Figure (cartoon, rainbow, N blue to C red):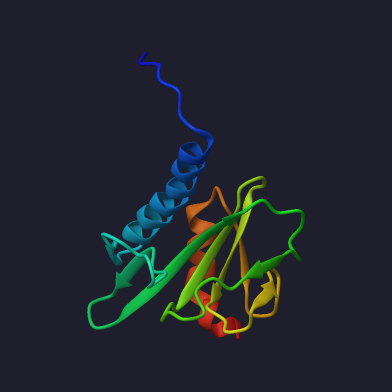
Length: 136
C-alpha cells in the first residue's frame, strides 16, 4: 500500500479537502447526465464549475464551511459575478445546502429556498438539485 511520506502544509491540505468537494459534485452531476466544465482559473468570476444540458449553461460556486449549526450565516463572496447556484458543504458535519445565488451580503444556510442534502449521498444531492428552483 502506498504511503505519502512528504509533509503537506496546513493551507495546502485545506485546499485539497476543498477541491475534493468540487470533485464530488462534478462526479454527481456527470452521473446525472450534465456536461461539466471546470475553469482553468476562476479568480474574479467565482465559478468553480460550469454545467450544461446542451442549450443552457449554469455557473456554480462551491463553498465549504466549518459549521456550528444549520442556521449559520453564509457570506456572499460572489456578489459581483454571474453565479447561478451555490453549493455549500459543512466540513465538520455530514450535510450541505444548495441554493440559488443571492445578492444580500449574507444569509442563513437554512433560509427559505435553500435545500438541505446529506453530503455523503449522491441521490440526496441530486434530489435537492432537481427542485432547487421550485423551492423559491
